[in-house]
Length: 330
Image (cartoon, rainbow, N blue to C red; front, side, top):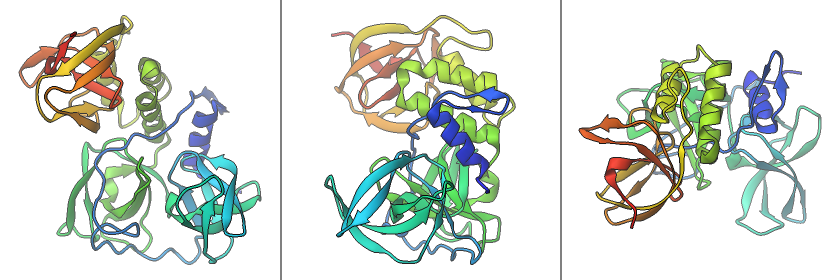
């Protein structure tokens, strides 16, 4: 049976399994950056995606932990959870309206088959056509049509994971879909030379996602990316992230712990998924006067936009802020 490299990789990372010749750490929730906005769950603005290829009855899971369900009497109950990037095959074209047994909004469910042969129901919005891909440039513009003259005005950041395919698109574009942390679906077009399906690139993206979801282990995941996936598109990003923590190429001291609280000194201060002003995706913002709990601090003094300081990791919104923009302590 065929299973894409992306699901093998994602499943191994999520379960802490071993792929041939190399052991991989566990990966979790994917960090998200700017998303295509507007329109409905079917498409942002005027996006009209290509039809699915007639000979491809597969879909890719877009949300880590997506429920794989049994359906009875208009309700669904979870049988198991699926990994981000897992491929499933559609059993039929039937669509059933159903509501989760444990509560929640009604959704459209379709019947799919796993590689194991087990069949069940998955909410349609949690699936995308194609295969798992990762954005490789810092800001990849999204488009409502497969033309550069039709930008949405939104961008996907480096390391963003999407499901995408080029069948029926042409012109150097792929059609992508993504599920945000809020459950909203984003769809549109990306340039095909700004995404990658390489094993190393997908692995690094999943490790950075894990680092964003579990900041206490940030250094460990960055070091795993360096050790196991040297030669990926993101080598410079890995080294930059470690350097911000005081690691660099030769390693370095651990982060300082439990340094208390702080107050934001400016408006519109970015919170990033990694301690890097260039490559770190923005996951939130702070306003002047906002109080934050500081969980850790990098050991290296850096200069960013004329200000000197260290990166600090905050609890809420979870991520990294350049310390010069905070007043540390009461």
